Length: 247
Image 1 (tube, rainbow, N blue to C red):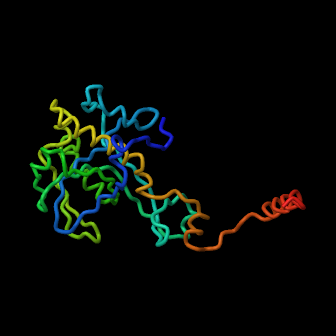
Image 2: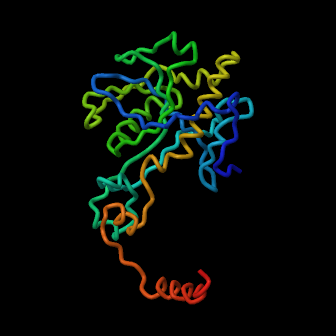
Image 3: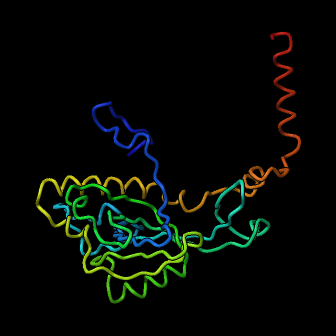
């Protein structure tokens, strides 16, 4: 089990140092090609990402694409935080949002694959994507005819400010094709991609919203927070008595 620390040297294991996971955000008048790549298997004890792959590295037939979602509120100075009940209504009206992980392939502005970069195993990005329930429902309808496990998605943005987008399926799923390859160079690229997916998945809830108490939200907003009475002063007095004449 990881304790949150990563051991590495300057010669090995330091590839991620200085890099920051950035959420996917589309630019206006640009089309992206993306693989929905958060593979997982839902069992009786919950989701299991490791079970998504067979021992030979191919995708388990029981694997599906995993999403997470929440109701959240945005406040300047705080950012997005979870709405956890009526006590949070004082901060605003919550909105439902979804998050998953995208593997964004190198393309030109029209969404055509940069074959040279793809063959060299370069130019791709694994990114968390936070999006609205409306977009989710649109993609869900497309998924019925063109399952995302077998097809990439072309994502065309017409308005970057409001992230207005249209979606259309591609003919194949590039990551699936790579998973089935026996070429060493492809396997090496796949290993890097899967490592990045694992890292993004570990932090995706934080990318979606912060889990804050009501008091923590108030503190971040600079508002006064009620504190318990009696306890802290009593403790301070006891410590002062014990240290009388010592310091």
